[in-house]
Image (cartoon, rainbow, N blue to C red; front, top):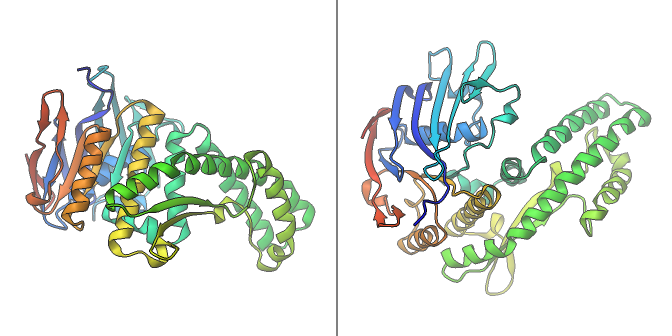
Amino acid sequence: MNTPSALVCREIRLRQFRNFAELDLRFPTAGAAIIGDNGSGKTNLLEALHYLEILRSFRGAADEQLVRFGADAFYVRGRFEDPASGVSLEIEAGYEPRTRRKRVTVNGAEVERLGDAIGRLGTVIFSPSDVAIVTGAPNERRRYLDIILSLNVRGYMEDLQRYRHVLRQRNAILRDGGSHDVLAVWDQGLIDSGARIMAARAAWIAAHTARFAEIYRIIGDGAQGRIEYDADVPFESEDTITAAFGARLERVAGRERERRITLAGPHRDDLSIRMHTADNEVDLREFGSGGQARTGAIALRMIEAETVREARGAQPLLLLDDVFAELDAGRSRRIIDLFARDGHGQVILTAPKETDVVIDQADDRGAVPLDRWRIAAALVST
């Protein structure tokens, strides 16, 4: 059997990152299960690995918060390799709060723009905090969409950066009471970049609606769920987005001047996550149980993993942070079956106790148990 394309982490080096003063680890191709109590540093280790993918904390922490207490800067280096092709990749990232400088290198060369280094690895992280995607405010779901699309859809990150820049300028003009003519200078840039963002979001959600429903049904043992684009600017087709956005801005112009903020655009979008009950369909954010919300969050991460696989033609590197501890045995087993059926790359997971490790790797020889490592007080025993 041919080895499937998948970038795996061979080595991670941390200096002054979170509670790690110093850490050097070499990972097996299959991955590893890292066992330790809460507060031992196991989530911080996965955070460091995923930092090399998105160059920010998946937990929403500012770079300053990632520097170990009393240290001047943090440093993270990862060395990765595709066993199928032999292609290797090394990414380094460091941040110094005093100068507010983030330095990133790829294969030893410093990148001119951070965007040139983002999304090189194909990692997907599953975390208990993912439930906030389902139960949290709309900005949590927009952030989920923006990260997936920035990493996997060409041009999306640039459109998002452009839109945010124009939105800041436009809001500043509204706050200062600028004239209609001054505001109009920025309107076309807002519409053009915003329309491309909405088109990309609509296309991605439409392409994955059926798969989300399937995964939700499998994990939830027959439960029915779906996702839907709740666009702030209603439009009938991608061809009509630009006109619809422009018309919406005209309709809210008076209220924008009263409130001194932009009131239309993709910065007000939402991703509707819904489930069927015996009588009707309800929003998981408002009416779902803890187990139903976690099922929705895991289904979203699984279609994220499929997006990575489709966009890059390679298996994603899975980072599983204590994913199964709060799930019943039935849901856990069905999730494992999905992973096994769909395939996956290297797995690096954390758990508070060894009995929570319910996933292993596989190759053409069959099951390959993950190495069990212990972590305590930011020290890892392999």
